Image 1 (spheres, helix red, strand yellow):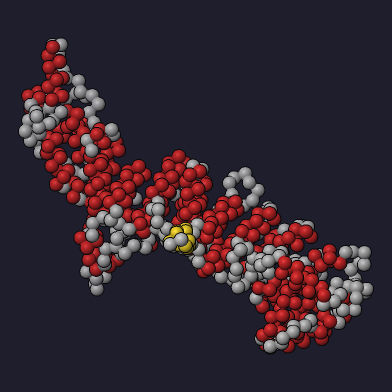
Image 2: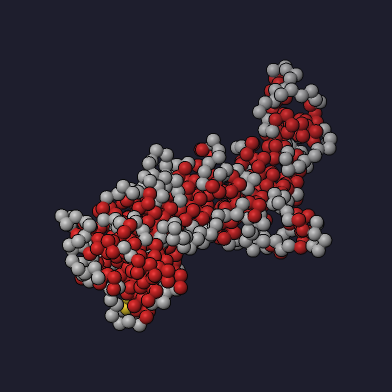
Length: 587
């Protein structure tokens, strides 16, 4: 770097130049070589102008470079009073660090001047100034502090009824959008400083992390990656997970599941993923089906990552095992912590998993074992209706028509026919995908329910099924087959027609809605050949008793929803996090 200048003004304020000129005189050289000045020629020019008494303009964009250059040139007070370093430090403390916007800009400029900007503590002073301002009482904050947030119309003065920005109260998270401008390393340091102060709530910190994720992780809201810089993406995800407040509810389940999807895609460390699984499990009842639909890694045959969802459900259920005990006067009593599951939360999770099973059942490559294992995990949760799992089972049978009798029997055992709604029963009696045993069970339990509601103390078989007590001969099914296997076989259309007629007649007789009267009339026109075909299977009332006792011995099973023709129960509401422009502030 070459500058043609008069030496004395420079030498009077720079210890570095004094040394360089002294060494040049010893070598009889009139030139002074200056290299590696922090901030380059622009920063050196600021220092030179100051030495010559010329006006120097400092701002948030050049002050760090000027400070580093002055340090390099040795422009300290020991050389001359009122030197440049002193002047810059006064400017930083009296102007820059008092301005929210300028503090952020200055902090961003420190990255290009490492490591000197760190040694001079400019970066750390900026971070502390930003964190302090983020924590001040909102009554002392004016919207003019912020410069990134998209203002509302009334804040721009377009609404004559509003007095500009002062018309709206400042929320506690007014600062989160502005910090999204920082790179992840600086952002991490600012958030850590804010958390250390212990002034802001964990919900506000969680909101800041959510806003940063949506801004800095392309495709985050959709669970994909729109960036070729996977390493940078991975670092960002790991850091956000590390910064998550420990308190439950600081961020939503939906946000945590989006983080988990991102962590899986970029292959973050096991620690980050395990932490997310644990956090999601602690508040699983808040999640939606769409949140749980995690894509399987590339190369796998299945569409969704069911194993991860199983881990989440396991974490949820483990909360009931985490009760604490304390001894008091020789008595041990249980202390139920806030995290212990309530019946309401367990019921919500059971319905959530039922709906999730109905979605993953559409995958033609989904093994039956994965479906059954996940369903059995929530079998311990008692719920009043079992329509949810019925829909999932029916969807699986529809998408996997080639499964064996034993597999069909295994998946249907997950369902408790006694807990199906009337609509689900009507659908099941017409369902050609179900084994005959299940169809007859549905009809029998519907009879029991109808009889109980009508005040009958001893539920009995419908008359049409009593007429089928004539023995096994006459059945169109081969006499050589095992009757038990016939019960597990898929019901034929004719058999379903018979059972449907019986159900319609039963509901008509018990006054279950006028819409079923047409079904009752059809009972009189049931094909007698179909009735004859059923005689070999429905040999006596004892077969129903056998089915009932077998079902009871299995214990309570999990419930389900019926297939798509039954209709969606508990429709999912969109729980996705709003976009940045629609982000809800934490008041």
